[in-house]
Image (cartoon, rainbow, N blue to C red; front, side, top):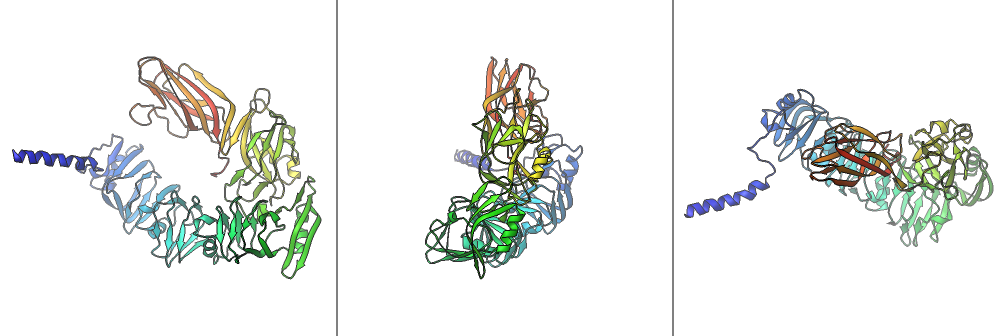
Length: 626
């Protein structure tokens, strides 16, 4: 009796152990006809690939134990899943032609061989023994590396020329005595990334956030020996002691990100500053230097002591610069000094449109290159003066398409869609010879000249502003670069439909019912929605499916992905479904990526399904990801 009781207790104790195991080691369920394959069903990983590569069908390959390979290529249609203790040890060369690699944050690649990843891959630093090895293995690849754990350098290392470093969480790279070099492309939020007494070498053109370093002084120190042009983007309030920024260390400072200078300390700036007419320095310290600006706004200081702050441009530089920009200086207080000039106030008139600018940072637009794809402000709205023909564009700035210059709109601008294009506010925005069409989408473009000193905006049926840039008046104004900042739609009377914009989100004042049908059917159909066309956006829709009885449903998806039949219990599942025997409605608010024609795909389980779609708006990134 005691033996039976002990056996039962032992069996009960085994249940949670077995249940908690990630993988049953002695139960292998696999089939080349199935939806997934277990590598342990084969003698080698190479045998598994040969067996499942018969027809090139997309297949999930699960690697649950350590596999050793010599020379091997993983085809593009294989999805690699590393589970349990799964890993690959490479002795010669592993070529991975799929971007679909799935694993947790643990080491999955080992061995002395080489690994080549296909362009566009996303790998994680934790998949390798350490960051040094991760950078070495990927040095000649074109990919994104996610820094997925805190890293400490164990030797000198270099980031590949085509490798982007991405942080999804604030993991810090520490260097005690080594150098991490060739750093340029970084994607990260406002949190610390770098620390230590070693060195980080950044390439020319880098844009670095001050929050990526422990202090502003540290940011300056880590970039001082490169002697290459780069930008330190101050994206949070900073407190600093004495520090000097050399000519190649440009600063860009956001509103509200004050640099607090401690009492008795001096910040010396021998570079340029990109900032608007708002305070950027505060407290009891001192600002000095030979700043590379034509005009230095008083608003930057607001009581902070300023000594020996001069412009590094001499009088001839200013005269020639103004002349090339078509600007006449009508009043200026300019004092010649041994090391340059001091510009305390400048009032200038632009000959192109007669606008007057006073105490403004004339060259701030081009003193520092904005980050690739940057767009801030420039939000659109129906102008109150003529809501159906005019669009008001708010103050803002952006990097142009092509990433060669900045476009800065220093004051709000209203452009008329029903008038021929002209430079200036409350002026025409349509290229000459083109009438406003009915039910037509128009891209709205910000325009700029080569150095950013002249800006404008206009409408074009082309998402690349091809017609605007060919317009004689636009050419005469010297506007040669553009950035698409949104789209508007006209109705059947050529009036602009009402909308609101917040950030990347555009919402209709009145949602549009685009689809209302009683027979969706089981065949995939492209559905056109009332969203911006010419580019891919995310449609924001309300959808309802009326089920006439029995188990029915509808699958709504992007035309960018494979067309698959909707299923109840396996992928891709259903967007709207019901399993009731009575008539019933199922609805929901959805976001789905469109194609460039503003279309998504719908596919039902059978013919007896009603589908209604109302378009609320869309999300348009306006080139931020280009």
